[in-house]
Image 1 (cartoon, one colour):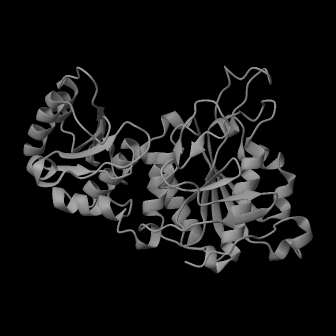
Image 2 (image 1 turned 120 degrees about the vertical axis):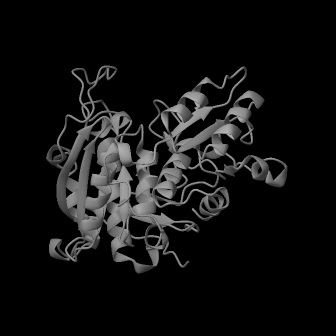
Length: 357
């Protein structure tokens, strides 16, 4: 794809507010909206207590980049993200992007589950207009809070993509610490650092700094408009949604977790395997029995980068397992939930989806 290299979005390059793109900023809470009594000690901060209007007021430069339409969707710590909130957020984004009055969406989010939310939206948003997620590692009340700049950069990226046709088609993006990531690739890699988000396997898509945006590669796998998934099947009572859980393989692991999940009626299990998705023999036996009882099993890896190679007839085909490829266990769970909700249950069909998305 032909991706333009850069653009300036500072005040000297914008002719007037009426000509700026209209970007909806949807706030969901998180550390970016967090506050603590002590600016120098944030260990006891509370996430999601700062409203979207206050977040925007802290970044007056936004008015030089876009016309902002703020909405408070939720005020949660993202560790407590739920499927119902996911569907609410995705449906609101699709509604907004279907309007001629909205050119793009920025979502402020907590860092803990940002990568999962971003990937879910990557597979379920039905528009080529920009959707950019951002967050912060330091609460709004902290010394050197990183949220305001991340928010400015996210809006800058959304405005740029909205006004440059050649930059479309990247799917859902994450703007964090001056880098632009694909929702499929990005993961949280640090518990404290302001550069906590990386794309370990193939790197960021590009960067944003001082109003300049540059994309250095494009997204290849299917997403958004070319995705076959919708959230219609997931917008139902919890009991009706396909339950997918994650288990891990490690030295001395038992089969207790798998047996309990199967007995509870789960529809799918993602395994955070060792190395190249390898599974302890005790756990593997339990998972093979789960497959025989109609449970979908996907092999991922707990390593943090790389991809899980399909073992073919020697193992995966014989056991009915599916390879997650380069998706980590948490994103593999998102894709498996959507696939099962769409009625895909056969291992061969599921493997095709994991190879596609």
